[in-house]
Every structure is written in C-alpha cells, then in structure tokens.
Length: 388
Ligand code: FES
Ligand SMILES: [Fe+2]
Image (cartoon, rainbow, N blue to C red; front, side):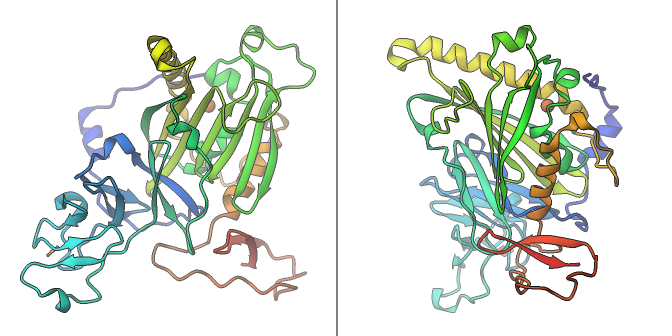
C-alpha cells in the first residue's frame, strides 16, 4: 500500500536542508556510472555544485556544450568552484582569484602569473563524465571508465526523450536499487494486479540483464490482458537501470516502445537521490503526428510518475536490515541483484586512491579456511576475489 505523504513542520524542513557540507563516509558503493544531473538542467556557461559520497564537485558545461566535473575545492586557496565558479568559453573560472580550469582539471590561466610559471600542482581532480540519452553521468571506480548501454536511439527522430523527476531519499541505496527486480511489491505498492516474474539473464562482472514476463500458470487480471507485461532490463551500472518494454518475449534493445532510465546516487551517509527519465517511441513522423506524439509522451510521463509516486514514499526511507528475511515470493532475482551490487564494490576505495592490486589466481591464504570471501572488480571489469 502507498504511504501517505506527511507534511513536515518548517523547522524539520530547515534541519533536513541544513546539513554540513561534508561528513565521514562510512558506506562503500559499487563501481560504475552514477547520475549527476539532467542535461537540460545544465545550460552552456553554467557551473553547479554536485555532492557524491560526502565529496564536493563542480559540474559545468562550456560554451561549446562540453561537460566537466572537477573537485570543487580550488587548488589555490580552497574557494568552492561549484558555488562561486563561473564559466568563460571553454573553462571554469574560480570566483576568488579567477584561475581558469579546463574540463580535465588543468589550470590554464592564473591572472598575473606567466603561463610557464603555473605549477604542475595547479590542477583539479577530475572525474570522467558522459552525457547519454539527455542525462549526465560520472564514473566512480578505479581504472578506466566502463562502457555505457547503447541508448543512441534516444537521439533519433523516432523518439521523444522526456526528463522525469529527482527524489530525495533518506535511507539506503541498495533497497531502492534492487527494487528494479522486485515483482512481489507490484500489487501492494503500485496496485498493479498483474502476475509477473523476473528472470535474470546475465549476472557477471559489470553486467546484469533481466526480463519481466507473465508468471507461468496464471491467467492474468484485467490489466494483464490490457497491457503486455514483457520488459527487458539492463543495468548500465549497479545504480543505473535501463528498463525497456517489449512487444513479446523476443528482446528488442533498440526500438522499444518505452524506455525508463532510472538512477540512484549516494550524496552522503543516509542521503541519496533517485531519478528517472523516459524515451517514448513516436507514433509516426512529427510532420503528420506531432500533436499525437506529444500527447503520447505526456501520457507516458504521467503513468511513470504515478508509478514512482506510489512507492517512493516507502522507498525513500528504506534501510536494509542486517539480516533481511527472505521468502519465496521475493523471487531469486533479488538475491542475484544483491550479488551483482556487492560484487562491484571495491571495499574502502575512494576517488583518487590507486587501483587495488587483484589477488593472485589460485588458492590464496584464506582458501579452504572457511573464511568469508569478498568480491572486487578489477579495472578491466572482471570480477576478482579477495579474502577478508
Ligand atoms: S581560491 Fe580559487 S583562484 Fe584563488
Ligand atoms: Fe516499485
């Protein structure tokens, strides 16, 4: 059932809004791409603050449209580039002494300092950033950034790419992320009385693919007969999901009727954002079907918003119990998703740390000892295992 939204008192809202800018980050999160902002919300020439795992960054878009994300603390005297920085041409300019930084973090200009004398240390730590399907994502993890799911069809004339919403959550990211493969909550949280199940198709390294299908042996309710409950899901990263509705059990990756992009990003301990965007296949060319295409896009937006609203008031407060209880209707997909999420965590790794050295192959010191084994991901994306 949906939780009723409670209106907070003004002092509670102020308390929640006034958090310190940095806290010790206790939790580890998986390697992968994370949602930063909707592309539409970062116009050329703008710089905004972005926080990730208690660390402050400046996200900016240059005049030509290129996006950069650098450590927000200016290497000169520590001004916050996300809050006082401006963009001039292709560079981010500090608001205090006007040092100019490239998208890769290098300081190219420092007023009244000859270019040749600019220190090599005059550089901001920078993070790989990409823009896909209208969303800006950044990479978190040791080694080179991984591949992203092919979403090029979002940019074609056949699709409408529509920005969704950003929710703020106060719990953990894992319960909200794994809910992408939770069919058990459909009838109670979403009131969708369709008998469906998830099958995991791939779960290895950085890849996790699954499909939604009608549960075997069920006739299905009214809704099930009306809508086709087939979908193909793929994780572009443990916290970025791509969910594509399908005509039938045959998987179509590049011309799905509806795509929902979801993403969760940890901001600081106990605070995260969760977001969605949709890609809607048009009925026909805009020249003939313009109003109909737009009406379809609006209808899909409202349907997806309704679905999110119906369980976000639960999900945004969820915290994983130390020993969650498992029952059969949870389905195996949830357990598989948890293994995928945890496998991609590099324990203790933080931005700027060197890549961990993979454990040597063969029996290690913990082999056969019965001690727990934790998985980590090597820079090339293959899962490696190390003992704890
Ligand atoms: S503090 Fe940024 S240029 Fe001086
Ligand atoms: Fe849900």
